[in-house]
Length: 52
Image 1 (cartoon, rainbow, N blue to C red):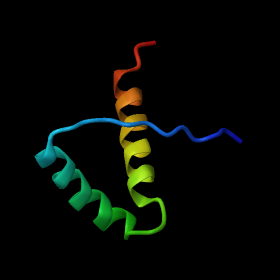
Image 2: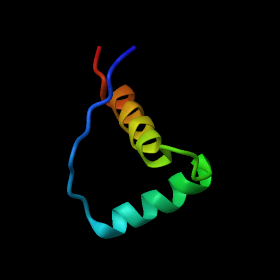
Image 3: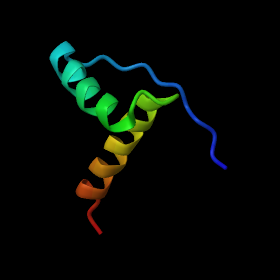
Image 4: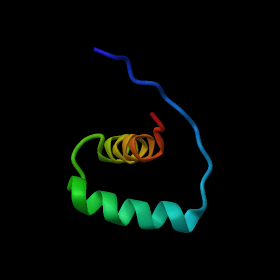
């Protein structure tokens, strides 16, 4: 089981608002929804960018 890491980031307010709108409707505001959505987005980005 891996340990979670807390990070602090700064992003454009409009990007954050749009992401929150989409993520909250998908994750249904369940506990930890924002963290889960960000992690999923990061994994998708890694998968897309991963050069083998």
